[in-house]
Length: 155
Image (tube, rainbow, N blue to C red):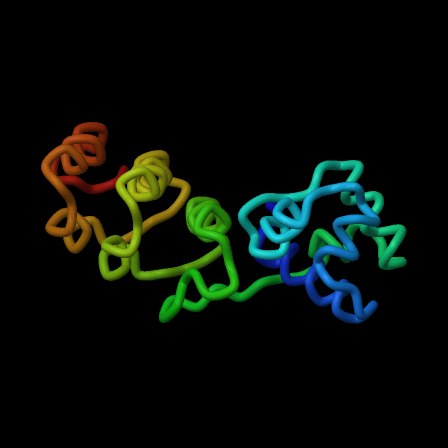
C-alpha cells in the first residue's frame, strides 16, 4: 500500500533539491499550489499523469517516488509518526506490524477499531482476547465474540 505521507515527503524533498518553490513546481505541472501542498502533506496523491510528470522532472523511477521498494518501520510507541493513519491500520490488519492491540486500541477511531476487530474476527491477526474484551464497547464485544466459540477462544 502506498503511504501518502511518505510520498509527500519525497515530493517535497525532490522539489527542494531542485531549489523550486511550491508555486514553481505547481506551475510546471499545471496544478494549483494548493494541490501540490496537499500532496506534500500527505492529504492526497497526484494523479497518474502527475506522478509521471514528477518522475520525469525529478529523474527518478516511479517505484522511488511512490516509495514502493522501501520498508517502513512503524513504532508502537508512536504509531502514526511519518505514516498516514490509513497506512498504519492496513499494515496492522495485514499482520505486517505487531502491536499490543488491547494496549493501543484507544488510539484508533471507531471506524479504525472496527477494521482491526474485523481482522481479529477473520483470524488475520491475533491478540489476547481476554485483555481485549475489557477495552471494547458493548457493540464491539458483540461483534467480535458472537462469532467465536463459547469462552471467546479461537478454534
